Length: 432
Image (tube, rainbow, N blue to C red; front, top):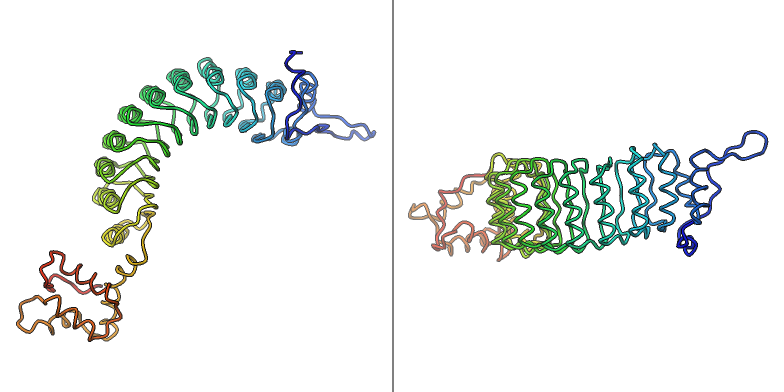
């Protein structure tokens, strides 16, 4: 036994279990072979068995997240999994595996060909762990989903992984969120995407990525026809980064989800991004919450989408933007043509009240079987086809239309958009 093994005690969350036992009718208990293999490996390594593993024997999904497996527990588990062909998804998040425990698992994966999904998030892997995983990817493995979130990976770790993935087309989903990757590492990942024909989903949420990474990713999207989801929330791409991605969207035809939440995307950046949306026919989900956007930027994005007849956008998240009346009106118009469009936004009660003013105005005359055009004509004594706003204001109050002062002023502003102090009522048609 390795001398270091004797120093390690069973980690918190590990429970001793007798294994998968059956009664042969004589009162004697017999464990199944997989259970016996695992318990023998635990005795050999000196770690306590994890009862949850024994309970999940034979299942395709092995969930050991947050069980405190530790590096020796990983060694015992790796020994057992060498001969376990039932498991296809191995969940080991938050188990203090460290680089040593990860090495045991990667060696096992060179033999076990059934495991396709591996979650090693939050296991204190650091650079050494990234090197071990990169070596596994460079040699051979069947892992298609690889989750490595929260492992303190830096730019050097990102480079190791990127270099390995340049020749690995097996991995389809890669999660590197919540790490310490800056632009140097981000550029390596971007360059990797330009040559990788396998990855479908890339999650780089909550790193320290900036404009250089965005430029590399943008360049990759122009030649990469496999990536479908790119998650970049909680970074610092800024306007220049939005421009790079906007330009990429003009050419890319495979990306269906782009998450740019909290990336310093302002109104100018939104306009740059909108240039790509104006022609893109693939993107279905765009997330932009928690950015310094105003209703101006949100409106430019919505207009780019609505004016693009080939747009595939179904969901846009600008939920932290308090929009104005013109945005709401544009959205209502867009939904008439595309009922499935979901745009998450915030709206103040005053905006909702103003938007309802026009509907109340029309409803008031409809309930009285009166024509709005007749109402305007009655105010147009000289037949000029227009009515002074002061006359309109007074007439609405006298008719007891249920509108407050702010709603009336909003109506006037809407009817007299050029601020001429008169309403050309011939431009309005009765609502259907």
